[in-house]
Length: 493
Image (tube, rainbow, N blue to C red; front, side, top):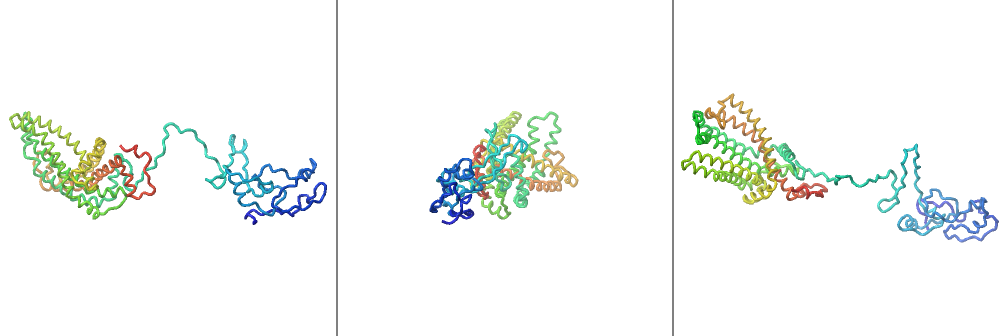
């Protein structure tokens, strides 16, 4: 047989024994055949007297076969190495190999690693014990040295598994969002795609602010407020008659703002959907995707405000009939109660319908199906949705107010500065109307993208909470190695 590489045979069977191979009685013995087994001569061991050097040097019976001795003791060595299968079997802790004689076992055993000394009281501190390395097994090819991992007791109270952070390929993380993340995501979308966003909403801003300018020029003041100041004891009918013009103008401004908000929400839904996935989008691509849905979007923008107008008309109708029959004060009071009740209903329905535009554009649904879809997504989370919308309206309102005050100061310096909703100084002149309209267009071009992006992010958030949309979005964004967290169902409400 051939020698195992790295393990050279230190001697042969024909080499002399220690002490020149002389036995105590110096009797020549017959030569033994070379069988490859270095078995010590039992006669030589038995004839040696106790306490003599021969007895000390005589090989003893195998007591620790397969031990990790680094230097084999002197003894008989064979020319042949042990078979490869013997070492592999003895190296496996679960399958014991055949017992070998002492010399062969010491020859076939691999050199053991040096045992580090155990630290004493002055070496490493009291109580530190060295831990032997683990036996080699299928999980690791050899012993691992170094400090052992500390063993901990039961987990403390309040311990919970660590949930991996949600992926964030775009402007928001792919998980249920809070109000601050929706607002910051809306601003992040505007910063990343401000050219496309402002180009899409510019036409809507010009249309709505142009209507508001005409309303301020012709419908604000008709002399009724001056007549009200001259009345010493005005009745409810006089007050309603005097405020009718300004209230009508305010109502028209609110309707145009609703229409503009629905249109911009639908147009910017494509931009927000790309921003959530971390993808860029051009004006041409977003327009091509939104243009097929534009007729349905315009119909939705006109239908929802008209539905609110119908609710208000139904609530005001009994009071109007009472006033027309002759009881003007009673009719006005009944109409006021109807308006207050209708306002509550309109606010509730407007919030329920608030996600219809993103559903119409992204899910390619009709007007009726989009409205039902919005109601389904918002129901059960009405207060949360209205809270986010109020927060966005507050932030965008402050920005619009600052820009409007700047242009109002310019209008007062150039024109007559009139034209407020409850102004009694006469209608505004055209320079004031134009400068105010320019300020309104700039403010709308800056704030409409933010509010529309917030509506689209609310739509995404509600679908994540109810339908686990974050998993589909992560797959669409090609997030490497993403898996839904184990507690994903616990955070969906």
